Image (cartoon, rainbow, N blue to C red):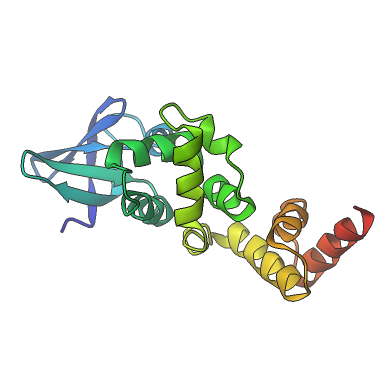
Amino acid sequence: MIGRLTGKLVGKHPPQVLVDVGGVAYELDVPMSTFYSLPATGEPVSLYTHLVVREDAHTLYGFATLEERSAFRQLIRISGVGARTALSVLSGLSVADLAQAVTLQEVAPLTRIPGIGKKTAERLLLELKGKLAEAAATPAGQQATDVLNALVALGYSDKEAAAAAKGVPPGTPITEAIRAALKALAKS
C-alpha cells in the first residue's frame, strides 16, 4: 500500500490534486480541509494516503494529517459509507469537530453536510462512538481528552464533561484545566 507521497504539487482541481513524485504524477482525491491547507502549485507537498482498489478503479486519497486519514479509514469501515461520503464528512467537519459530535452524539453538525441525512448521521454517530478519540488526540485535543476523562472518572456524563472541557482554553496546564472545567460545571 502507498502510505505517503512527497513531491511537487503540480495541479489543484477540487477535490483532486496532482503530485509529481520523481517524474510520476499521482492523482489524489482530498477532503476540502486538506485542499485548503495545500501550498501553492509548484511547491513541495507531503500527503498521507489511502489506496482503494476496486474491480474498475484504483483510487488514491490524500490527507494533510494522520488524524484525517485515520478518521477517513474509520468512516469507510461503516456499512453504507463509501469513500465519497467519508470525504464529504471530512470536508464539512474537522476531525476534532467530528470527534466532538460523536462524543456528544449530536446529529446537527453531520446533517449540515450535503448528502448526509438524519438516519445516516445517527448511524455514523453510533458506529463511531469510542473510535475517534485517538484520531482527535492532537496536542490541544489531548488536553481536552485528559480533562474529559478526568471529569467522567469523577462521575459526570460524557455530554456534561465534553461541554465543560470545550470551554477550557488550549494550552492551559492540565490541573488548571480540570479546575476550570469543574468550576464551569458547578455554575451550570
